[in-house]
Length: 180
Image 1 (cartoon, rainbow, N blue to C red):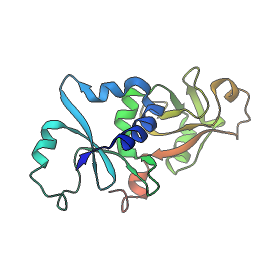
Image 2: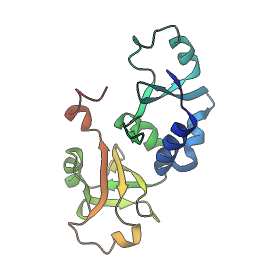
Image 3: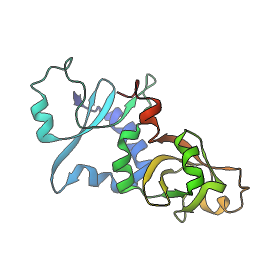
């Protein structure tokens, strides 16, 4: 467990800012204590400093996890957000998409969001912007990247892709062997 290097921090925060923008500040500067991001076995964890200090007494080879896993670095040093970060992404997301009940299962099986499934979308959402996907009952289901901006989405056919799938809560069941 170690702090992120400057290059790792840059890559990580660029990816995170696609979803929550400047709200990253709210993750680090919290009124209930100091929190930080730490790297352990190529995974980035979000943990309170008090728990992190206690974990230093555990050997690196014995430490499995610490705090909330936000994602991991690939072999090519790109960062991939995991579904375990959804609670924080949903809390601070700048752009959101709500999908109709008939599109929820399709999304939860790992498919992209089609225009026919979109119930609402945040105004002025740009193209290739990270968005959090919600059900119509305001339950966060996952996250993705927009295929078009809000104005272009209105002109699309019902079968056109609006949001590219990145992760969804169905991954807990589909990929439970490889997630941690």
